[in-house]
Image (tube, rainbow, N blue to C red; front, top):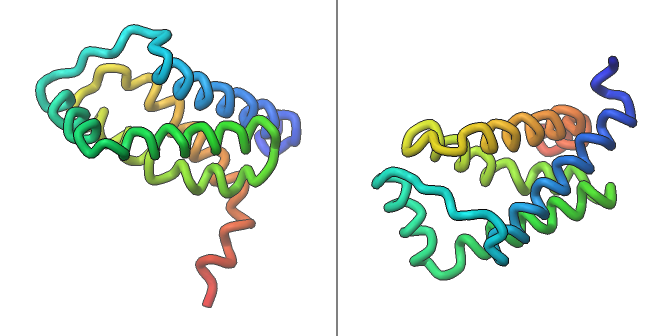
Length: 128
């Protein structure tokens, strides 16, 4: 199977887009029980919540990127917007709390895959 084929890329975009939209919807409507983290994880998340805006911005980026992937519009931009958030989620699960690490791993792998697939579009950013 060719990992660069249009069908594989499109499938990954749709699955990742639906995953991101589901995370946003389930977060706002509390469809899933909230995860329980250790003290360090709860302290960090409490700080994010206390800012009053950061989690909302993260959810907006998730929703926009998810819709970009689902509708195949500006998919390279969506993957690029998600990169810093995905990195922070991975670092949270590596250093603070490993609860739910598998969801973070899914997000990291799918985001890296889309970044690699669209790398030719990012090359001009790194040229003089």
